[in-house]
Every structure is written in C-alpha cells, then in structure tokens.
Image (cartoon, rainbow, N blue to C red; front, side, top):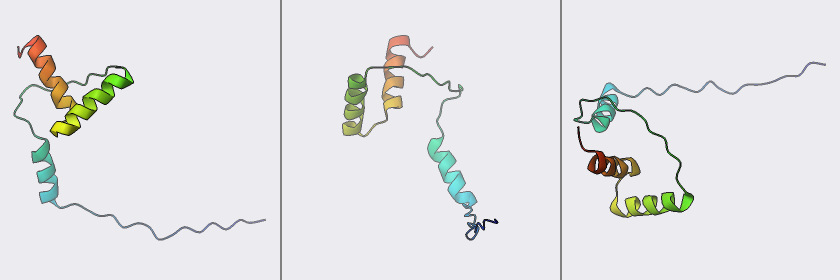
Length: 77
C-alpha cells in the first residue's frame, strides 16, 4: 500500500531591503557603549500585572522602567 503525500507550492522568500534592515537596526540602537546583559527574575503575577498596567498607560516598556529603577538604586557606575 502506497500513500501519496502532496506538498503545496514552495513559499516564496520575501527579502527585506537593506533600507528596512538599516531602519530596524537604527531603531534598536542605543547610545550606551557598555554591552547589555540579560537578567531574569520571578515575580508574583499581581505585581507583574500592576507593572504592565502602569507601563501600558504611560506607553513605556517594562524593561525601560525596571532599568531606570535599577539605575536609581545602584547608580550609573
């Protein structure tokens, strides 16, 4: 018994232009010279919800808010 499997048309590759890539990099660029390190923490769901709600109402990102709080606590040195 042979089973036939048909495959659809191969999807075309959509290439982004170099300008799109440059714009993406420029949007992500920061003026910081020091490399970034990732920090992962566990927090209670209610605290995450409160932080996310406040950040959304201000139009900011959670990472930016927390980074600022950490800089206030531990300084820029």
